[in-house]
Length: 143
Image 1 (cartoon, rainbow, N blue to C red):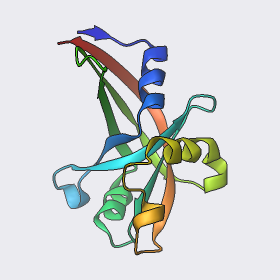
Image 2 (cartoon, rainbow, N blue to C red; image 1 turned 90 degrees about the vertical axis):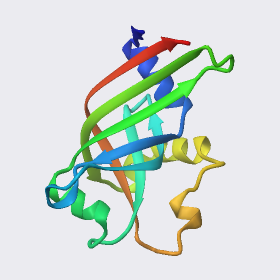
Image 3 (cartoon, rainbow, N blue to C red; image 1 turned 180 degrees about the vertical axis):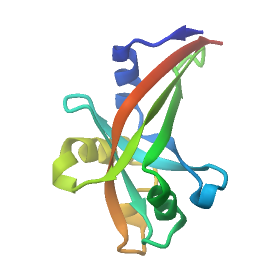
C-alpha cells in the first residue's frame, strides 16, 4: 500500500463518477451510506452530487443533524493489478447548478451508464449539492 499524492487523488476523482456518500445517521442512529453519481471538476476543485427527496426524507434528516459527510471512490486499473481508493471528508451544502456547472457537466459525462436522478426520477425533488472538502486521502494497493 502506498499513499496517493494530491495529483493522484485528483486523477481518481476525475476518472470516476460513482461513489459512496456516508451521512451521519438521523437521530443519532447508524451512519447512512448511499451510492451516488458525482462529478468532480479539478479546475475549480468542486465535487458535486444530486440528492433526491424532500425535507422529510432520511437523507435530509441526516443533513439536518449535521452537514458533515464522508465520501469514498475506488477503482481498479485495466489489468486489475492496482486498486486505488480515495476518501474525502467535508460538508455537504446545497448549491445552484450554475454555481457548480463544470462539476455537474463532469457528472453527466462520467455517469452515462449510471442512474442520474435528473433523468430517472419520478420526483421533482432533486437538489444539487457541493461537497466542501475539508480533507482527503488516497491509497494505491498492488494486488
